Image 1: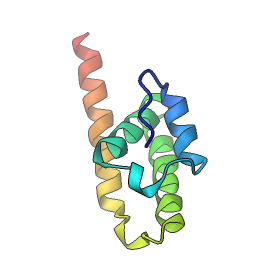
Image 2: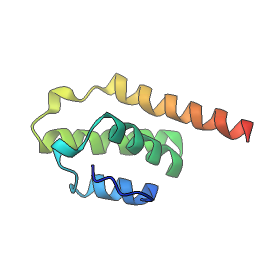
Image 3: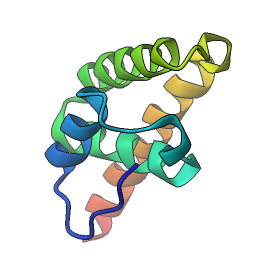
Length: 91
């Protein structure tokens, strides 16, 4: 994923959903950052739906459908949402 310092959550999502992210440019940290962006913008269940759909489309585009794992994807979203909620309560 192109690492633009200061990119907004929406820019990160739009870049990924538009197909502008190359397979070789999408690493673990990008995956986590993308999930974080969805959870920051959308209610958790909407974020889950949109994030899952975007990942599936990405996997299909690069012929890697076997790498998509729904359980891991759901876990990412719920864990990130929980951490965001927890950090908000501390502020």
